[in-house]
Image 1 (tube, rainbow, N blue to C red):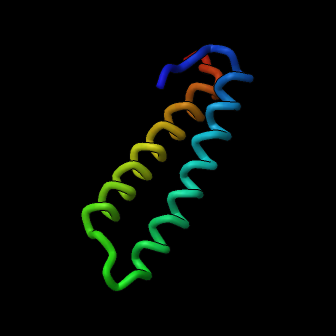
Image 2 (image 1 turned 90 degrees about the vertical axis):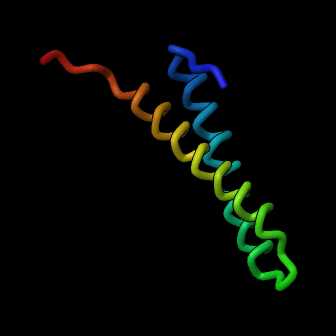
Length: 69
């Protein structure tokens, strides 16, 4: 993932990341509902979800203009 200074590009990236984050919620819920779920797969999805959350937070902070001290 690369970050851009263009607010429109950052907003688009945020939208994509948030959508993937929501999709992972559903995938994790479906896997956990399955008795024979692969625990490793669930852990990988949760790790990906955390990584996405960090990326979203980083991009959101990039959209906030720096204020003079």
